[in-house]
Length: 144
Image (cartoon, rainbow, N blue to C red; front, side, top):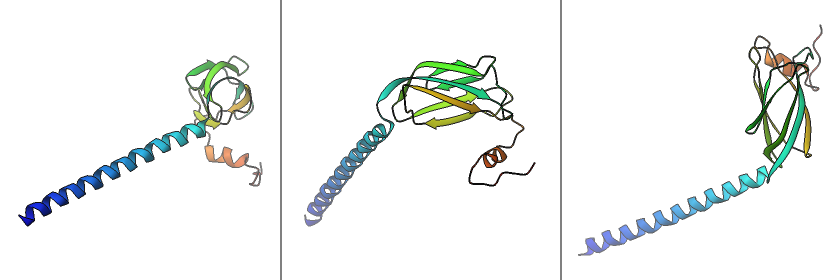
């Protein structure tokens, strides 16, 4: 009889531990989601204007530029306008892609109702690390 009581007591204790751990996990997940949404900020609509260039500062046409779920295609001067894009007031993502060039994906912190940006796309044959190093102000410029 003692062993039956002991088994019931062990079963109850295990059940209580399981339930309390499960509640803690749900609370932690809920707080993480809330903290992440606070980091992104409130949803807002924003106009994004800009220009897409190649590594020689020449404008690129027919580049697809995405901001969130909204997109635009650059004109012959490399210009694009995305109006009323749905973003967050602390965070937006922008992607640019064109055949023969490396696609880029950037995260930005919008500062105003309209953003003006410049994007440089590298040809698929260009080395990305060289481009990064060449324009990093903390590194010496390469001799040509």
